[in-house]
Amino acid sequence: MTLSTQFFTMLSMIGMGSLFGAMFDTYQRFLNRPKKKAWIVFINDLLFWIIQALLIFYTLFLVNNGELRFYIFIALVCGFAAYQSLFKGIYLRLLEMVIQFVIAIVKFLKKTFQLLIYKPVVGLIQFVITIGLVLGRGLFTLVKFVFKVLLLLLKIILVPLKKIMLLFWKLLPKGIKKIVEKLYNRTAGNFMKIRNYINKWINKWKSRKE
Image 1 (tube, rainbow, N blue to C red):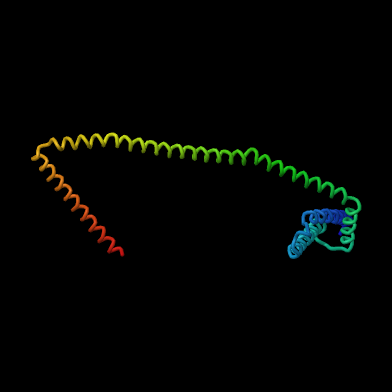
Image 2 (spheres, one colour):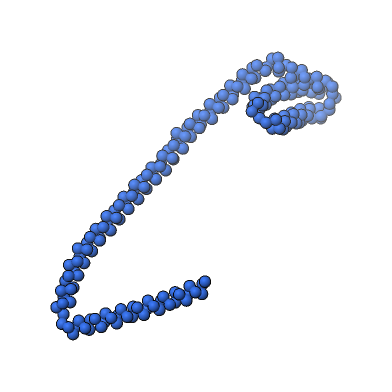
């Protein structure tokens, strides 16, 4: 391994140590340990350490083809110590600012969505439902009114018509009355036969179905 490769390896491992410190603080900030169950915390910790190991090894592979040296661990510790002493306070304040900024943007987008999309759509749906109910009630009231008017008209028309028919029937000669009665009885009898025939077939069909 050449001196330049060793130098770049040292610098990259110092950087990875500092990056590890920043990622560890970020992980701690979002994990919220007291509110999580122990097994969830354990799985998260395990995944975090695996990812960090993979990142460090991948960086080492890019710099010196993955050759391990004792000074690499020293460089990682130095990078982590440098972060803790020099950059931790700045990074945590910056991280908190970014988090609050993202939260503010999310709240703004949420309010914008509610004002421009959600509330207008809900209001439109409520308006359509209200109009539908009003129109339905109005139509139902109109139908009831028309039905009552039609019944009243039928009564007004049928009562005089019935009296006129009775008067006309009384004025008819007896011979015509007998012919009309025979025709009425014959028609009624035919209707009774047809109804009995239909009832007979309906009863047969029900018995077969059972």
